[in-house]
Length: 376
Image 1 (cartoon, rainbow, N blue to C red):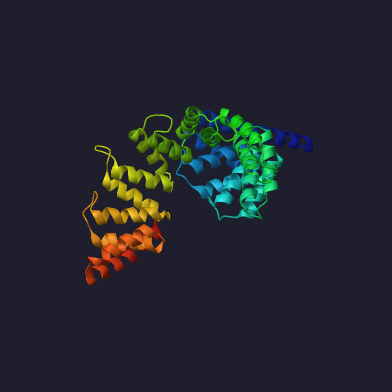
Image 2: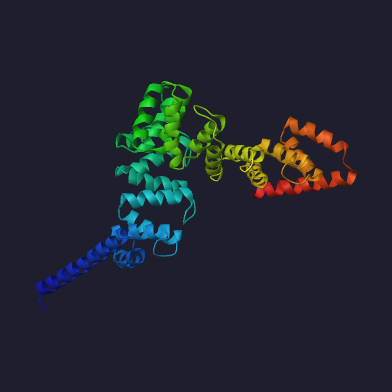
């Protein structure tokens, strides 16, 4: 075999292999778009192993989201690293987020910055936005509001709605720049019209207060509703409070409970407390003391001390639960330790009618409850 023939054969084999890799990727992409994830996993696995960067990125996504295969963040991180090292900006961005959140590998803010900067240099707006967030919160380096604003500006200039919103917040708060509410409103409006839930919330709250815009409760409610439907927790909470208090409309306890529950189930402690209060005091059939008790406990576990007072009151007065002076003593003791004056007054009166044995039991229960709250 002549050298020239050997080269021709080698090139032909390479071309054939490349065509097969391309065919595997296209088959995987078609299956992915058709939501046939097991087939997509099979096809992407073959082309990813052959070194196809796009296949490696898609395969990582299947592992990360548990589509067509059992979720495995460590495997996802491996394939993201391979695609990122080959220069794929989307993989670099996602790998940076994996390092930032400690997902699939040990949290490493320096590595997060490294990969996010590589993606940002390739104009990945998500990476630019995340770098802005890291600088704004001092993650992986000193807090630098000016640098954060610059990253947000770069991403916002390319239309990233989250960056538009956060840049608006920077102008609203005067973070890394002079305070400029008019500029903040313009940015909020751009992001809100593009469907950004955080911007819809921020703009809605400005319309609610009349700061920088005309006060318009109806418009505020409309914007908060749009954000709440997207799961924006602060919008759910504030809209729930507006429905509860009849702000701009008649009070609607059913709507208030629905919205406050949505926010409470996302961990919003004020929503947990206010939902519990409504469920404790609402008229039948909306009242649910047992559910109120649970949400008070969730709020208390997050350090919302007023919930400790109300838990003591429920047991002290037998409101929706069996009266239990020992439990009332324990909850009010915790609230007193947290500086709640009302609980201290209640505890003083309660002590007068308790036996030494009951007080000792209350002290013991107080310690047990404190441990339980720390674990939640």
